[in-house]
Length: 186
Image 1 (cartoon, rainbow, N blue to C red):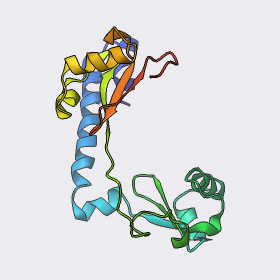
Image 2: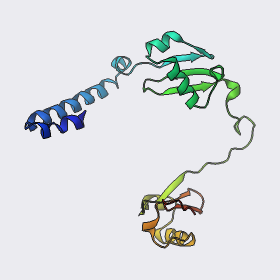
Image 3: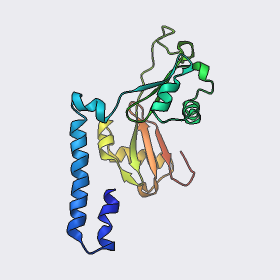
Image 4: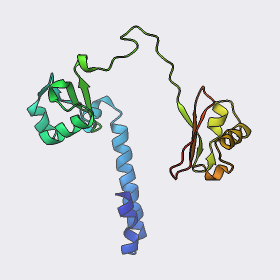
C-alpha cells in the first residue's frame, strides 16, 4: 500500500497529499502494532488459534469460521508431509495465518532421547563468503582469519574470492563447502 501511495505523485502533482497518505498508513500500522501488545486488545486484533482437526476428525464449525475450504486444509496438511488425515492429532490455524500440524504420538520421529542414546551436538553452518563478499563476523566467530579462508579456497581450486558465490563451514569443523553459483561445488 505504501508503494502505491508513494507512486501517486507520478500520476498527480500533489506531493503533500501523498506524504500525508504514507504517514497515515505508517501511523495506523504503528497503532495496531502497539494495541496488539496489550492483552485486552490482542485477542480482538490478532485472534486466537483455531483447532481445525482434532484427533483425526475435521472440526467443520471452525473450518467455516476461519474461511478455509476443506481442499485448502487438506493441501496444507499434505504439504506438511501427512497425506492421511487420520494421522493427524491436531491441525491448528495460528493467529499468524500459519497452520500447525501435530501428528499422532506414534508418528513422531524416533529421537536419540526416546532411544536413551546420547545426542550428537549440532553445529550451525556459517557463511564465510556470500556473493564474493567475505563475511568477517562469521570468520571472527569461528576464530579464523582471511588468510585461513584464502588458503582453504585455494585448496578447493578458487584463487579469486570474487568468483566464489557461496562458501560456508560448520561452527566446530574446518572443512569448507564452496559453490561458484554456476553448478560447481567443492
